[in-house]
Length: 53
Ligand SMILES: [Zn+2]
Image (cartoon, rainbow, N blue to C red):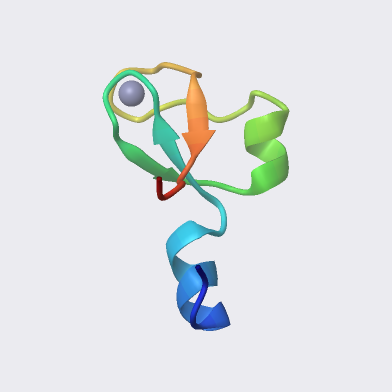
């Protein structure tokens, strides 16, 4: 799990991945939840958080 809080924040905080084209988008959490963020590449709004399996 998170070994360093800073690294964890840098890698996962406010970063989302497009479900369609796997592009990473950095955006404020609230904006994504409100559906105001679109993928730069495919204009899709289906974003998910970055998660390790
Ligand atoms: Zn996309």
